[in-house]
Amino acid sequence: MAQNRLLLLFVRNPESGKVKTRLAKDLGNEKALEIYIKLLEHTHSITQQVKAAKLVYYADEVKEHDLWESGEYQKSVQPAGDLGYKMEYAFNKAFLEGYKDVVIIGSDCLQLDQELIEQAFSDLETGDIVLGPATDGGYYLLGMKQLHSSLFRDKAWSTASVFSETLAAIKHENLTYTLLPVLSDIDRAEDVPAAWLDLK
Image (cartoon, rainbow, N blue to C red; front, side, top):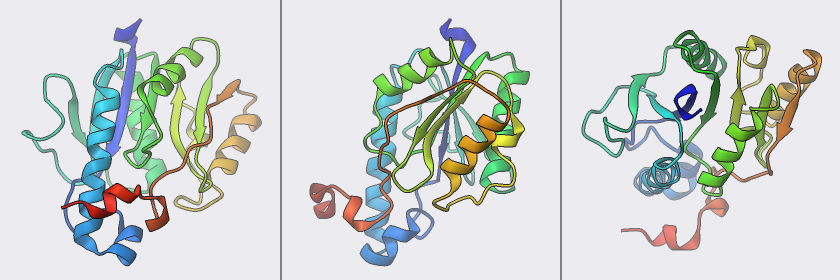
């Protein structure tokens, strides 16, 4: 079963001024970068043991010797376009390569854990879609077992309506779906654990 599963990870290259820009407005570029690196480390730790193939999509360029070991994680670069196009491309490529259950996550959710990712794959055994809503109106996880392009097109990305628009598209296509618990992304200073604000 695991060989038919693919976990897609969308990450940004950890460079000052290019990550967590909303955080950077309050905390500065360097602190925002430190926090993002901690989020990458968390995402790495919760995905290492997931029973699925794993593919990291970098925002800018592939790094060979970094957190994501080449033996455990495949690596690629996100195509140009909006977030919807990037995700649609990644899912479509995965299905063309023969994967049956595909789940995508980002690297902004400290509350996400391995158990929830495994739950998402399990839910795909009996349903068409699994979706993890975020408190900001977006989502932290999306899973499907065949491409449904309507979930990626004509959405107001990076706004509070993304989850509701995506759910409407799912219902419009009469797809079966499971919702995971609502979790919080780390996008604002008040979302950051207090201990992380003292990172050196």
